[in-house]
Length: 201
Image 1 (cartoon, one colour):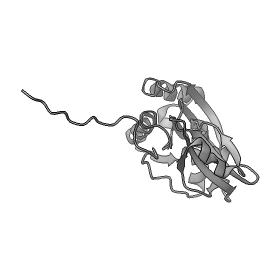
Image 2: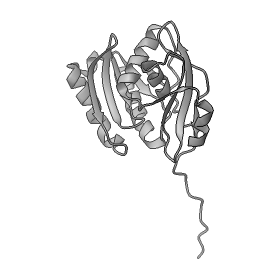
Image 3: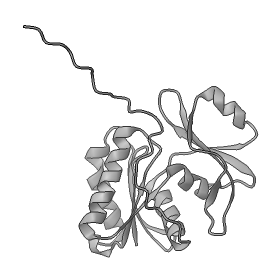
């Protein structure tokens, strides 16, 4: 049984087993990840009618997404898995969306990267496990750069914990390693340390 967590957009948590969503909680607040993450996990467990002891692994979204929101969900997942001594699996959000919404031909998954840009990755087909196959690198694109993919079907949807958990369960069953839990920001944080100022007497 998987506890899945995603904070790439709002704050969501889900309990997944045998490709079924047993419990799901969502807070549609792009700025309240830290305030909502605990409640999201608690509600997902309650709606699935399981306790923390019934969870056998944790799946987290590793982005791409903005710095602050993403790290809240990842930290919560790491803390839960560490406290329970269970396995942690990290999922690329665009891969999860691409797998949930495949196209008959090649397709492009995009998500809002702020600053008038998009996180993007193209896909072509699915493997024997039903996982979408990347045909490009993850990247940040400006609106005009999307024109180079004008021949592809566009999938513009936010990821959530349901998609992360469903993807993770398929990948785990197929023996795909999801051990890389480094965050995918794809660009520098919006906030950077200020330069030191000279202090005079």
